[in-house]
Length: 137
Length: 287
Image 1 (cartoon, helix red, strand yellow):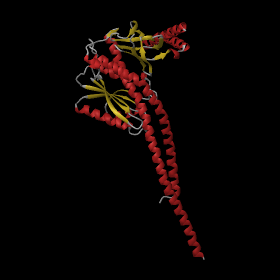
Image 2 (tube, each protein chain N blue to C red):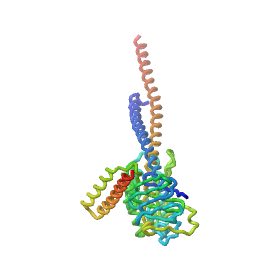
Image 3 (cartoon, rainbow over the protein chains, first blue to last red):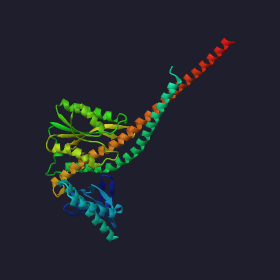
Image 4 (cartoon, rainbow over the protein chains, first blue to last red):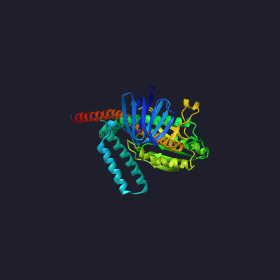
């Protein structure tokens, strides 16, 4: 089966670079799976998981949002922030979620509320991701 | 000839200065290494961003983003990235020389200029120039955060969206290597797409959720990432320039101390010789 080259970079560093059979990502209007030869495609990403499948191997990366670009031979993910599964900490994620919830409840200005909401979505997605990883192991 | 005591105090004071410049050199060297790492880490993102924007420019989309359109120039925006602190050689003065050149060029074409400044040095310099400063950000520190620079950029992007400015330039320092930093002018808007083999074909993306949303998002990010990259690179430039400047200051202090030491020795010898000849002369007169 043909492979497609995948590059995942965040503003801070390069996260993943290599070949893959398929990439599964959380695009804004639903999850997408992309294999070699896919039509040119561009989408924003939700906070969620990106799975890079290559044979029996699977890499899992969490992004808080970003852009996914697909060219026939190349997939590029520009993540706002990205973390590999090994770097994730459940306690921290839970903490972030609680903070976001408190911020929502406090509800200052309208802009604050929007920011809090975004943070809450990200924190929940992260928590969901970690829980899922746990059950897999 | 100055007295031996005077020369000795002079040597002392130069030695103190040398201690300071040496310390600054070492601090700058260690900070530079970290800044360089940071610069390297942010490079892939900026590079991918440029590629993606080149692809978007090459795609035959029904939606053409305003950053891709070359409008007739009535007013331009200029973003200048400088350091917060001085004592870094000619880094800022080279940058400002280039900025003045750019400003003068537009003045000749009777185009008005809005400037957006990063770094305290640019702030104090451009205030004297009497130009229209629309936004400013300083005190970004050695590890700048993208959130801290977004506000200042947003002012410029809004001005472009409202049609107040038609072109956006970035004047920044480029890190060539430790010894060399160059000022350069980069055109941000309209986007100068890199040549790409995709340009030859007729194709378009599948956009999700729709072309306008996605492209708007990418374009804003693109400008932000380029400016952010510039700010991060500038920190590396600052540290490298300071390290070199402080090294040459320490070396100069060393040679100065050497020269003064010679003069001091001569003065001391002269004083001793004089004293002896006075004693001998006195003894001869008595006997």
